[in-house]
Length: 152
Image (cartoon, rainbow, N blue to C red; front, side):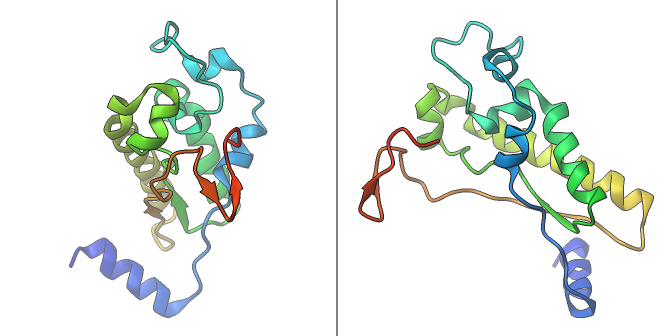
């Protein structure tokens, strides 16, 4: 078992750990536009990218890092990767299936860097990263009897 897992278990035996909050709502507070989601790399992408929050780890990583850091500043012990919609099925909405692995890796690396920075500042309070993913369903499927198409 890894030392981080052992360390996490020890922390859980000592106290309640605080998880971060919603990534999507924090991203909305930045009022990003289409150009922000595209960045330079995706400037000529053939479809709209606004709303592809997970892509921001590639096109606007400083925003995602700022959100992670804000949660740590607020007292979170654990942050979640910005990967809720990074499955190939969800990325198909933006014709980005081929970028799923890259987005997941970049999101994990960014979150880990933020957690390591905060742990270095206060070693007595280590910080952790949890990977996150949604159930693998396309947006247009029926959910609880209601079609979800158009909801992002």
